[in-house]
Length: 223
Image (cartoon, rainbow, N blue to C red; front, side, top):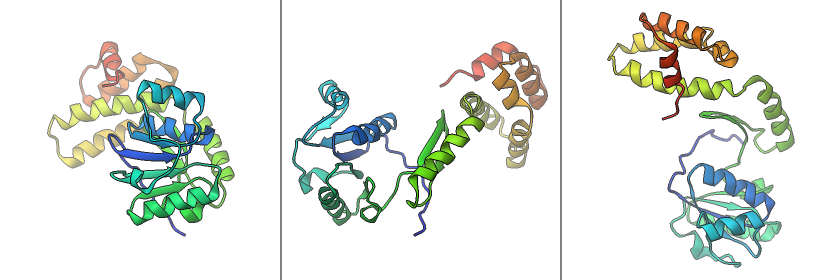
């Protein structure tokens, strides 16, 4: 089967997770990081998930799964150790045309979750189309050595620079040339070395005007 790769904005979206163990906890941590509105159904919850429920970070719907709990949901994750329950959750979700993932049961999914490497706004997703999650994890681990935290800082800076450059109302070709010049420069290496004077020099050349070390520090501040 061929899967269509996609990144989904879950901010404010209702996501129902059936399951309250360690696997579900990992899924929920990621969902909360993406600002999803998480509802959980499970007989038991890990201590961490119990704490989240008490703090109002997640909504606990009880210990028994009901089809009606999916009303208004955008996505469903079945993460129990009961294959039949996971399948029942999947079928209920599909009847409502919802996105559903049943952990370790690809035949009950209409989407699968890749192994993810994240450095700030840089997201690298590795998938074997469900054939070998272990291989996907290994490839992701190998990529971790190549893509360090400097990419996080680079993208913060590029986001700030992009707004500034677009405000100049240059042509699309000029914009493209400016950013292409930056990504082909030694900017990433300079950031990795934390050589802010070199970063300032590279930006000064790109802009055709003086960029100070203080300017660089401002560009590195997340908005």
